[in-house]
Length: 108
Image (tube, rainbow, N blue to C red):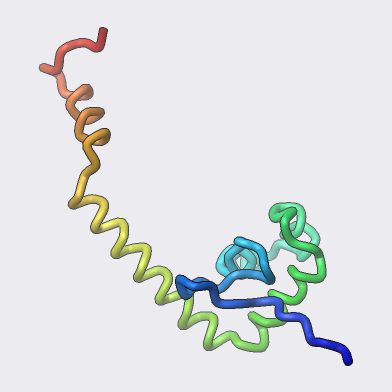
């Protein structure tokens, strides 16, 4: 019995990944839409086989509406994380900002 290979999966965080790798479908779709060949994409992501890259592109082409909806959700999620990070500065970021101010003491 020939078991069909799964080229795209959704991980435990809801992220679409290629095969069993950690490479996100987003990366392959972006490269493909920019005109990169599957061979070039495979060189950029050596964790993937050429077959997996082609499989991911085929999945994308067969499920364009679903993938574009997913990509919009990912963009919104990243934007929310950026906004949250801007509001909640980490202590190290605050120390670095303090070093940049003109009246801050010189580091020793």
